[in-house]
Length: 236
Image: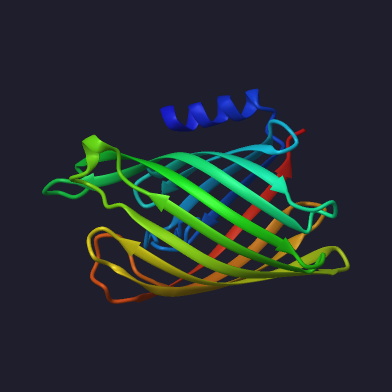
């Protein structure tokens, strides 16, 4: 509750512009490198503090037990590289909290692992319908939590396409990525997702198929999928 309150207060202070709330049968993190394997609820806030400076916190929950899953406090600088805003470079930093259960019972105690995370991204808006994104993330557990977490990197190339159809927007993403963790887990993965959103209400229905591995797992790739229902609304 403290993390949720912190995110809401900071976002309100920064004049949050949009909020997106999602319920999913299987929570998949924004980096499609691991999934919760349980129903999840997610709340994403997006703000523009200045023209280029973005603050986008989020908070997620494991609906199986009502406990927190992870929380982010992303700060990003988005820099257009041309006058038409076709090329946009982004650098970002996130102070992420991952609520990891541990102990004999598994759910008895939750260790909050802090993950400083750095991002570099290059976005190419080829047209209103087609977008290409190259993304790099590096993350590691804070010093005192090294025994509970692993550090690693994530590199991806994503293609996104959207199409307007009457009162709806139909979109899809193809993402090919490579992940590497300090526990020795590494490999290529891919995700495929699509959605349909209603332009006026902000309601959307999405589905995702992901082939990836998880931190602290074997090197075997696993296939996961999810279906999600959400809504995006403007706050100001």
